[in-house]
Image (cartoon, rainbow, N blue to C red; front, side):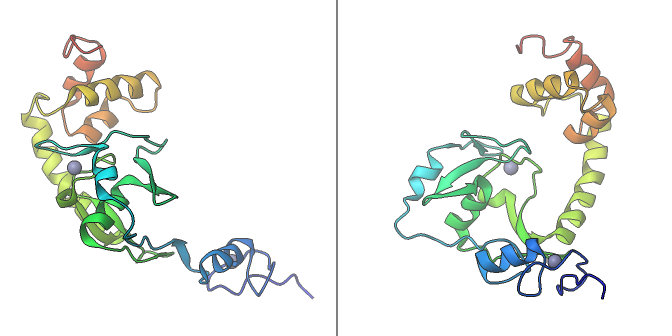
Length: 202
Ligand SMILES: [Zn+2]
Ligand SMILES: [Zn+2]
């Protein structure tokens, strides 16, 4: 007899309990459904939205989260006693509950039109799948390319400049990658890193 494997469609990991592998079994135990990756976020009537919005810097552009930022660049907050991702909570407080995220390409999540992971501005957010995200990024990619060739970097903020210098020092991104990420030219990034441009920013 060969070793039995998980019965979840497409999963080949070793069977552990109730016909599933460890991962699928844990998801079922936690959420009652082995396909759920992240749980639905409800609206808690007792939660005061002002507590959340007090930590968001509202301005003419993106509204950035002022609290903790995790390693992947997303804002983190406490929401009614649970750890949560800030922009997801912003969505819930504005539009109502988010459905559970199921594994697979159709997974629904709260995505950014602006690509700024710290941003909590409701009209910069949309509910969509990974596929929608890719489409949105394609559209923006074309816009960014146009902007990058004609703009000398005026749309960068001081915070962007600090981040660019940090990322460059860490060798995580060279000039080309940073130029693509920020939608500016390679020359602009080079000038920022060498402190020829934005010299007044520490
Ligand atoms: Zn499995
Ligand atoms: Zn934004």
